[in-house]
Amino acid sequence: MTIRYWCHQCNKAFSTTDEVINCIDCNSEFIEKLEHPEFQRADNIYIQVPEGVDMSSEVIQRLLSFIRASEDGMILNMLQDSQMDRVMEESLHDPPPTKKVCREFIKSLAETKLSDQEHNKECVICQDTMIDTAMPLPCKHLFHKDCIINWFDNQNTCPECRHEYPLDNTT
Image 1 (cartoon, rainbow, N blue to C red):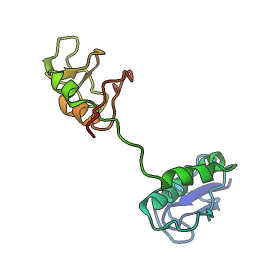
Image 2: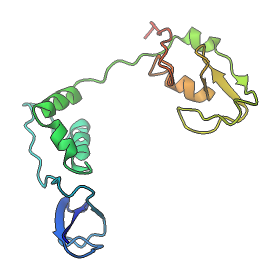
Image 3: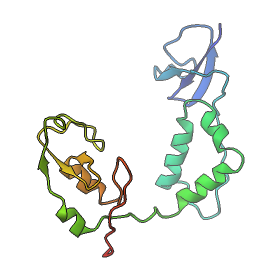
């Protein structure tokens, strides 16, 4: 039976009938068995980039790395039919403005001692256990104080229920 593998060292697929532990081309051990051998990985990806775009930019390189690292051909299939153009166009623009929460609202929040029922509950932001204290929001969801303050630097919603809180209009 033929088995398909992907070599992460030389970035290409190969097939063999052996249970290999090395790439047959470069002898690298950084290989993986393809879960969906019916999907072909692209050995080469060609993208038409608008004039003036710096191909060495971090955004372009991250996008290409994401495509190359796709588990199988599914991501490429999803990006076909002009979707790649849209993804490229969106990635070239400045990031969307952050929605920082009003400083007065944050100051009004108070860290509280956890009840027995709330003790050892998980903070959904960092996924660590809350031991003794937490910062409750008006929507009643609990978080570590540092986690929710950092969250509110970029978002104006509760991480659990998406309730919106007042924006800081001074930025």
